[in-house]
Image (tube, rainbow, N blue to C red; front, top):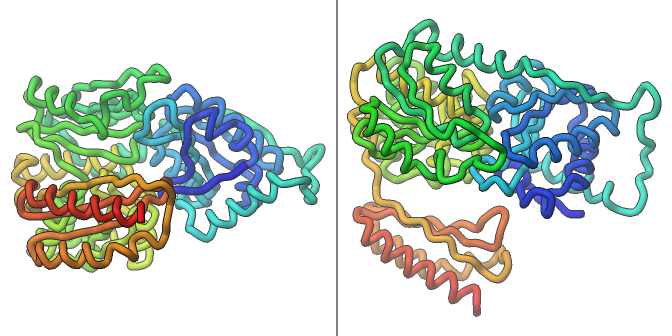
Length: 447
């Protein structure tokens, strides 16, 4: 039984790679490494969630933990309850993946994602528990853990969004289309925005356990773009399956990605004196246009490796207030310990309401996105030394682009894939340079 953490917990095909046996043993390992007498478990609505949640809960209870089943709840809702209650928590979700996959995200007490060191300790404990014998005695009698259900967490999270984000302001007069991805925020998203006065049209808002992310949500925003134009909405919001990320659509039907959402919110906070040290935190995948736009407005950009937990770590290190990823993870650190699609969506709509300006105009003021091409090159195996052979081709590409563009090569954290990212003034040039580098990666991998 093996397990490796990726950039956001563990994921795999449910009941084949991520089995109940693995979930149970991970629960035992988590109880031993992270501790805590009480744990919370939430899930998205995919069919395998109850199976894996029950197994994880059994593993925790085996080690003497009192486990509380929160039911279906967005990942940021689970993190919020973990932070508020000061207890560890787990989220059963594969985020934006197809419904056949599932995953387990763990939060330490306080709603924080795990460090690399803690994940390594969990992997080691899991390996030990999966070996021959277990020298540590299990709790017995009154020391055995318990399993209970508490569905009040959804209301607590909803009330937090309604009360803490807009500080009494409302969204009256704004029309929004929300694509809930048939996921964890189905029903909740429309309820939150409607209660604040917005006119809401909800699509992909009826989860049945198998339709999560199926041609909808932040990964497939075409339906949302069409719906925004059809109803004449001011904007659209596309969540993913567990609602920890969001992309937007402006009134013209144009997609607004995470960089642009972070950019308009950072600029707004900067102007209101609410952007700590006039600094924003993103990852190395952030568009070069974002960096240029923020610099033009006097905002410093700090970049981390890919993964919202690394963004969070940098936010906490510097005490900064906002950061996130191009994919739509947006973290407002004064209110959340993880990306929150609903929270970010509320801030965007609040900005529209306060400014009276359309989303497209706000985005154009904050940044101009450079064409970006991403090519995933699959290799026969994961080779940590492969990129060492790419120094020459990368140097040639960088010399060609100069200050006009950017090149980034990085290995996937979960599979034998090298991701080649190129930004350039035109899509054609970005594609040409990316294809050259991808061919060089394939040649180096086969040498």
